[in-house]
Image (cartoon, rainbow, N blue to C red):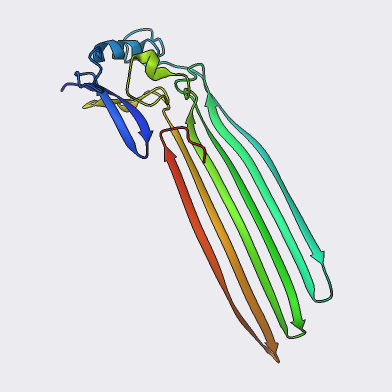
Length: 228
């Protein structure tokens, strides 16, 4: 069964383009030559001692860096009112370092913001109100270390985004999708929250009435370096 090597580029918004070793033309460039591009591609691959399908054995180191802090304020305004506010922030980054960088390395940066404000007011010994507003944001990236190194131009490809070194798909082969880390995606999740609750105490009974509103927002940019 014939094996076909395909180079995959994530171009953004889930779109993909391929170039086939069998000669499928990726662009309208009359000088395009798939064999030449694949030959250039393998020049960037790790050197093996025997056949090209032998494993390349290297050591790798996984790392995580973190920067975390939080602050909180709780203030009594009067005998009837108390307010509180808090803010939490974390900035973490995980990744892998190997001698094969930048082709086989990547990072997953992430930062989270969480802010909250509460107001507690007592109308009487039996009637009081709790109000809260909050916001949280989680930003995450899946980013190859080869991003921005102009590998499409180095490989002789035209008409594709200047993103990362391509992923490799071996079709009709037990190898499947192997090769490089070609992630170039950004994700952002925002949550807006407002809640209010009134409590009334009568004898041995407590009645509570309130409501909460939450708005969820998700943004995803795939395949190109866009600010989020």
